[in-house]
Each structure stands twice: as C-alpha cells, then as structure tokens.
Amino acid sequence: MPTFVQILDFIGTFAFAVSGIRLASAKRFDWFGAYVCGFAVAVGGGTIRDLLLDVTPAWMTDPIYLFCTALALVWVIVFGKHIVHMNNTLFTFDAIGLALFTVVGCGKALALGYPFWVAIIMGSITGAAGGVIRDVLINETPLIFRKEIYAMACVVGGTVYWICWELGAESFICQLAGGITVFLVRVLAVRYNICLPILSGNENE
Image (cartoon, rainbow, N blue to C red; front, side):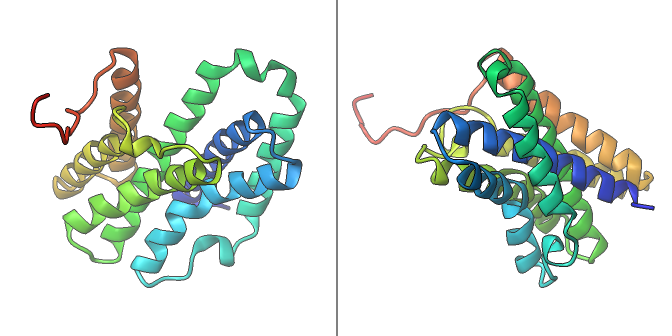
C-alpha cells in the first residue's frame, strides 16, 4: 500500500502534469511534446531537490510518475474541447500541485536531517521549479519572476510546516497545515491581486 506521502506525491504529479500539458496544448504542441512538457513540470522540481539532497530521483525508481503524466495527457485530450472554459479548474490543479509538492519537499529534507532553512528551500524548489521548466519550454517568462505570488507561497507554507514540526505535531498535521497555507496564499494572492513590490531599474520611477 502506498504511504500518505506517496499519495500526495502522485496527486501533485497529476495536478502539475495537467497544468503543463494544458499550457502546451495552448501552444499547439503535439501529443509527445505535450507529454514531455507535462512530465518535466511534474518531476522537474522533485528531481532538482533529490539531486541537491544526494538521493536518487523518485521517477527513476518508480514508473508511476510516467503513468500519472500519461493519465494527465489522456485527461486533457478527452476534455480538450472544454479546456477554454476550465481556467478556474486548471488554476486549482496548479495550486494543489504547488501545495502538495511543497510539503513533500519539506518533509523529505527534514526526514534526512537537514536544518529548517534547507527544508523550506527544498519545499520551494519542489513546488516552484517545475513551473519554471514549464514556462521555459513554452517560451514564457517564468511565473515566479512575475508579479504574482507563487514561490513565496511555498516559502510561507514551508515555514508553517517547520513550525508544526518543531511543535511536535504528527507528520500529517504538518503536511495538512503547510499544504493548506500554500494553497490559500496562492489563491488569495490571485483573487485579491496581492503581489510583491516590483524592482525597478529606473531611478525616476
């Protein structure tokens, strides 16, 4: 039976793969190109995290990530005609993937004995790096470099995860608190147009 963390990882993989494939379809990628884009989004952040933590990337030992991405591709193909009307749903998928991957990354780093700041960074990389890869593949400015709060949601959620961890909470409580925080910060930031200050190179602005 898969563990709770594995279930979170699989759901996050599917959610991120859907977001990547959907954007690839908007760029008129073929099925293979869309699959590659979805797979890169789904495992990119986790791969960078695992390499930094000196462990074998999960997708190299378990083919479920390939199957999750294939399922996401089928889902987008089947519902392709309705994709224009599903922006809110697809945003939700992306926010869920961001939340789930963040808590998985934080938990993995803490379980390996790394300090809290490394755990927060690993959670942020797991959650946000896949989106950077996605945006580069579809020739868009990465979302984390634009005004919308994206990676910062991972930082806030990772901090909440660590606080719960330090207080001695059960793992699933840490995951729930951290994941909900990431999701809410992301959703509220978009809903109310909350953004970080823009760094301007013009002294007169």
